[in-house]
Image 1 (cartoon, one colour):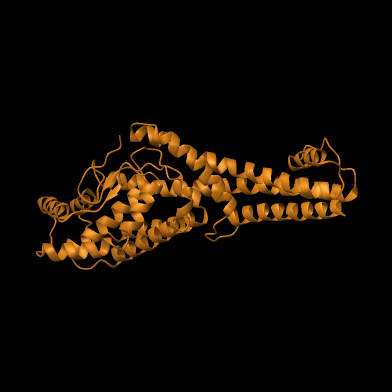
Image 2: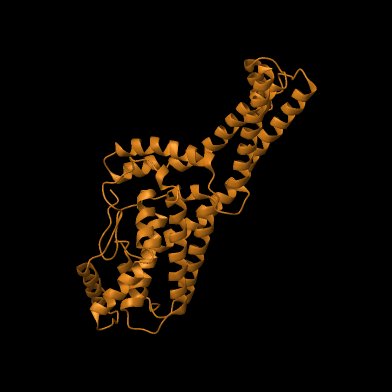
Length: 356
């Protein structure tokens, strides 16, 4: 009687593991929603602990960036490995419950089936059916990841194309101030609808891709000094400064871009903040990558813009208040994502960032 109960329990636990693993793969790569998958979270957070510890031992940002550049790729490769291990364990219990021999024999048969080697055969018809179903699920899990890798890298390439183009436009300091000066110098500050529209589309796309495929958030730019979080901060800061401080008619396209950026950044941030309790405690926290600007920083930015010939509003204090109100809509989310992804240091407006 006890043996029967143990086999029933083993079969139930095995079915649960198999079902949970296959469902996790479907929710990860097929379901077009920002679902939180517990198995994936455990895998990525466990690997993140390791990489954070390795990065903490490095002295410069470039060295830390080099270490963390491997985190997302390795985490993604390890995902199907963990899925297959869980699938094999689940089917070990199922095969043992179906009378395929000892647990060791059942594990050997299960491992053989999940890798579709075919060198070990089941002894019973139910065992053969379970063995073939395991081989099918094993192939399915591998195929899902392989088929979605091109999609993920296409999304990464599109993201980085905008980041690289932005770097060309915001000068050697890579700041919102330099971006505004460039827009003014090219005569497109008051009429650059296509540029703001492109950035709006970029924000809409990263919101969709970085919540449905959250590991994309941790794929780092090819150059150590670049980051999609930094780029988002520069665009939003530039829009906030122009709206609050530049004397010109309202630009509807720029305001749409700013709204899309605030929505995207906050939704991505909330996706990860909901799991903040699972974050490793040894993240690099030597300094916040994004700092709140002071009135002095803001007025220095005004001085730089005036020297560059940008027509500004006369009431600086009112402009500062409006800028603060606009920045409050995205600043916390930017700061959180910059820390989470270990982005390059960035002052909110006007100052240089450190990449070494």
